[in-house]
Length: 354
Image 1 (cartoon, rainbow, N blue to C red):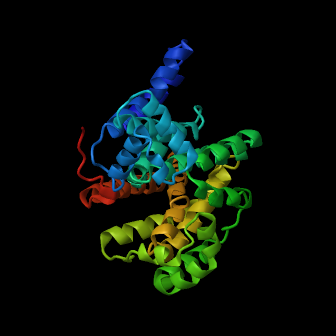
Image 2: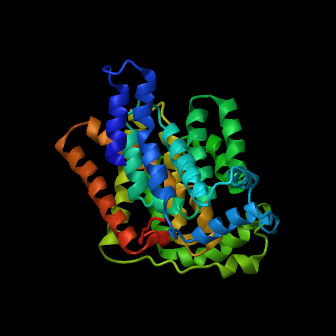
Image 3: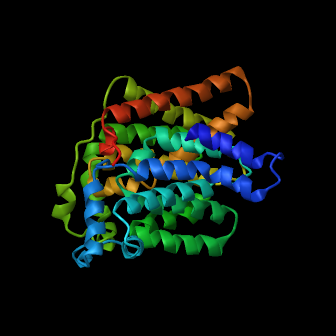
């Protein structure tokens, strides 16, 4: 899809094609490929059966036993009333996710193919097959950020309401957008110290963070502390090449940040970067808890854009050192993606069609 998006964007913007309709057709062709590939999957993703069962319950008018966001419920009702099979919900939601991801980047930008690359290789694509509702909200949030920077506030609010209809937790990162449109994490040294601190003391910080964030769970109807603690998972700092690669990418990104900020002054980069830093600081702490980690799935995926902007900066400032840095980003993330598939991340490793 990375290659097809690059080719389709190039063709769509080529002066050879005066037909705008044809150009748009080429531009959105990868969306169709993506939607069919992931939409026709079978038993792929941890929650695959849950989504299938919900669709069937809508068809049988028994969906009142579930409590899901109205936007997702309504989408299921439309497809059920059209007498479509459960496959349709996976095709349509895959289309929605990648469509909004596409729209988060200007058609005039060279950023899109790189964004698509990191969407796959950071394994955000694998999470999208599991946390479908949150992934829709996340990709809409990407556009909300873009429109906020472009001062299209009405569009931002409308899209935020749409995102809320699919996952109400989107309000948490949305409230941070105006704050994060500032150079908050300007000190690279302090950011590195904070990252190192949470890596070492993350386990000890979790109980305190749970206590301080209780109001968030109440707002999201996760107000039973025993339920929150039940879904704890073990976070392993890890050792070896995978861990070192990840940390080195974080450090390189932090090192490059002032140069990238200065180069893309009018872009949403600063907001994406602030979310990203918050995500990597929180990662060692809240990866131990299911619900808190889901909140961080709004922060960490912002690295898709942070890495894309960083690589675009490196390639535009064409020195040997910069090309090597960009190559390091690409090779490291190809290895990350292979490892994710091999380890069956989000139960997406053993892919099969219907």
